[in-house]
Image (cartoon, rainbow, N blue to C red; front, side, top):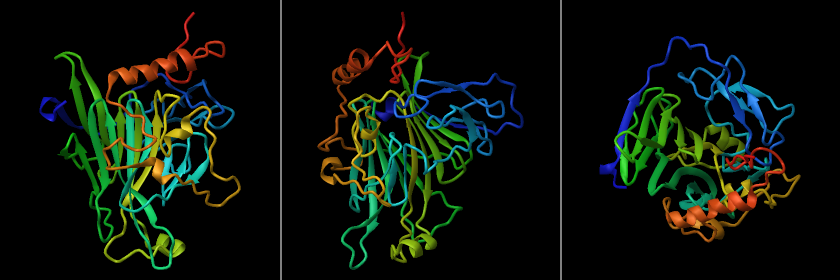
Length: 345
C-alpha cells in the first residue's frame, strides 16, 4: 500500500494522575520451551495490565521459565538477560533460553527472524582493531517486512553520547517518520479496509521522551528497544579500542513473538522452533554461533538470505499457517496448541 493511501495518526498521550480500578488480567505462556507452557497466569493487583499509561509505572509480566508459574511487575524496557533479547556485541538469548553470540560482520545485514509473514533483519556496525581476526560488532538498525509494508528503526551515528538528544530514526514504506519526543507519544499506522473498520498494523510508542520505544506489529511481535553507546567503561573492560569519532550507538532489543510458525528461521527466530537443537556449546563462557553466509541479506529491508522464508504471497502464507493448524496442532494435550490456535470439542 502506498503511504499516500495510509492514514497516519500521531497521538500524544498525557500521563494519568490516577488509575481506575480494574479486575486483574492475565498472561498466557505460549513459548513451548518454557516451564509454564500453556498456562494462564493472573497479574498482580498492583499492576493488573500488560500496558501502562506512564513510563514510571510497571506492567504485568509473567516469567514463564520459572516454577511456580507466577507473574511480576516490571518496567517496559528490554531485559538483556531474558529470552528473546539481543544486546551488547551482540549477545542473544533464544526462545530456548540458551545464550549465544553471533558476531557477523561490520556494515552488513543479517536475518534475525524469518517467517512466512514476518521478516526482521539487523544491520551490524563495528570495527576491527589492529591485530584482531574479526570485527567487534553491535546491532545498529532493525528492518521489518510485513503486510506489504517496510519499516525500519536505527540508532543514528554520533561521536559522543548525549542523553538529551534522541538518537532514534524511523522510516515507513520509504518515508521518514517523526515521533514526538514526549513520553508515551504514539505513532499509529492504520490500514483501512473500510471507513469504519481500521486495523492497527503497527504502533510505535515512546517509553521515555528519547532513545526508548516499544514497537508493536499487530498479531506478530512486540519489540522493546533502547539506544545506548559503547561506554568508556565497556571499552576499557573489553579492549574495543573505540575511535574518538564514533561511540557506536547501538540497540538493546527484546522481542516477544505471536503466532510464529514451526518453520520460522533466522539467527534468533530458529531458536523458537519446537525441535531446534542449539549449536551453542554448553559450558563455554562466550559460545559463538556462526552461519553468516546462511543469514546474510543484501539490505536491511530484503528477504533474500539462504534461509529466509518470508513471502509477500498470501497463498504461501496461508499454506504455512495451515500446516500449523493441521500438522502441529495436538488437541490431546490441552486446549491450545501454543501457536494461537484453540482446540474445541
